[in-house]
Length: 203
Image (cartoon, rainbow, N blue to C red; front, side, top):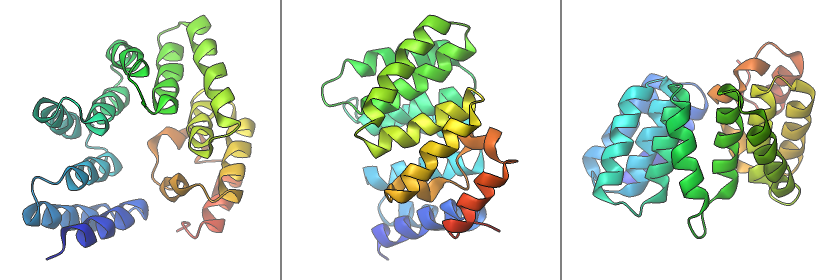
């Protein structure tokens, strides 16, 4: 009956690709503590791992309506719009969030880089990518996000080099390597498989 323990277990199961088990655990956490922002954010993470982007978007939007200052919920809205290919809306939200004090700029720069790329705005794409590359020099979380962009821009050598640095630096986001949808272009690369083995995330 410990919601945080259930949450942690659900996230672990999700990172391992055990999607149904993760859903069971996060729903139990929600039953125990339905108003916890952390548990609700975890539910969005589990849904993302299951590819249930439309449902996750609706829940993230509901969370924003409940608390307009909750930045993780807004990040969820932008992320699920991104997965659904709603790039103009992603751009609108992300450009606004970049201006928010203490925002996680690397998150918004990463979404913007690919969103501008997929809407044919090369100059803006390159501008945001340069800004993200600058952040990645000193921030491993930005470096992980940069790897996602390199993968989406079909620059696998740079993506994998960035991930190797994240691995060496023990960046915590590497736990999502196996299930991160933004690394889809790397899944057939043997170097990506080797990283999964080093992370003990291989099948």
